[in-house]
Length: 296
Length: 296
Image (cartoon, rainbow over all chains, first blue to last red; front, side, top):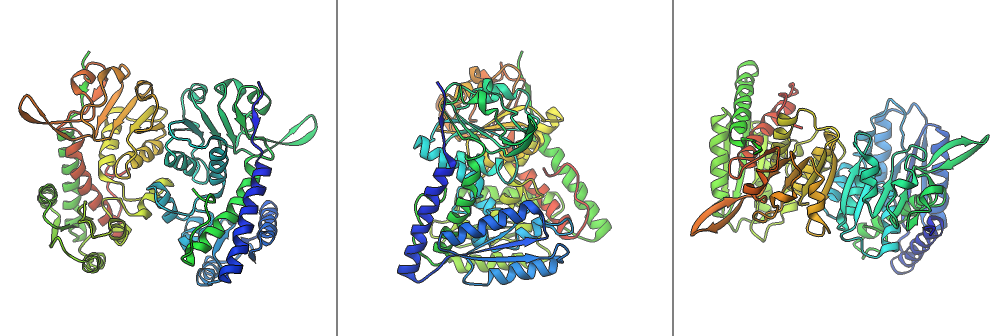
């Protein structure tokens, strides 16, 4: 039996709707418009596309979008000054510094200069620490999107065996923390894992976040497991450019109980969760009740 | 074949010796004496014993020990003032606020008021975040002690299957981060785990940190696995008081390849690692090379 397809595109639309609803209420009832500031340094083409897309969806959700485009040779001092200004701007509730930064800039330093309460990417070490101790935090967008889809599909995740493949700071590690917070038994596997097929085969939930095209074949997937494919890999096949995940979709869809496609799975959820984090940050900054179902 | 006993008491003595050697060098070559300040609020008898023991070992290692004993009804404001004073005291390189604090004090608030660079317990959210992103941090003492013993026994841990039972902020979660940092495939199990015996049976390394007397029987242990028992549980047996771990030692010793006893295993390592963290913090504060082998 083929798996149920988890439609990330449709789910992201419902998240954006929820966000827009909360934004409308914040405007009406509190006279507050949430604002998201995105800082882009340099002219990386992929980053430009992301930033444009973020700005567009921010405005569509009824929020204010502030874009700060800085020269590729911007000094660390000048960038820190921009971040500092945004930290102190009461109209800005979320700040995102688009990564990667040009090589002469210290990413850790810049990210950790953002006010943790406005750190809608959830990369500040304070937010990592809060998440890592089960406290209220800003949660990184991609794993938050994965968690939302899993909760939506399963209801409770308590007691499920989850395997996260990949141990990046942006996806793998925060994903593991989130699954642990929802009381899964969590295994983190990675390039040094000895018998990866065996590790994956015992999982009720598989989150693949390694960035290697189709590295997880269907026969590693336990019958009926839920597969969340975070990978977005550009490959050439039959002379055409194609986007594929970290999971071999064609074979995995035959064994999984549910699976996210690529594209149209995890991808669209990431920006939706960025918007969700911005509303959450805005509510917290103003001492208002947070929207439900929009964070971990 | 019975397991090799990992003698934590003897190992802790070698750590303390290393620390004392570095302290002597710091004094001689740099004119610096590392200092550890311990703050105790109230009269909890167990805490008093720990604090006394910490102070004694600090002095034995050649370091300065500062004890601040405050009344049980000390206000949050007054306690924060003490921490602030210690943060600003250049003779104090490590600060430890003994937990648990009396109920009217907010532990998170107090711990997060410690300068992260002096947070030798490694509980500040910045240190949790640094550890959680693979950066240099202050590492919680008990899991650091476990890691040291594992590295000493195995050399490299890369690719080993490790299971941590227990997801506390003080032991389980940082232990998982440390094992992941050493490239183990790490599983975190806990009270909601469905088939704990099965999870434990596949592990090359078992770290038990739940605080339930002898809950892990020997037949859950894979032949030849290394067992690190963090539990220190006081029980009564045959009319006598006895200390036992989270692992049933008598049966586990017959299957494990190596095992830490209780008492005399993990326990003695904790204060030794506190001393190690204090020297590390002192070196970092003074821009000096850190001692090798005393942190993660």
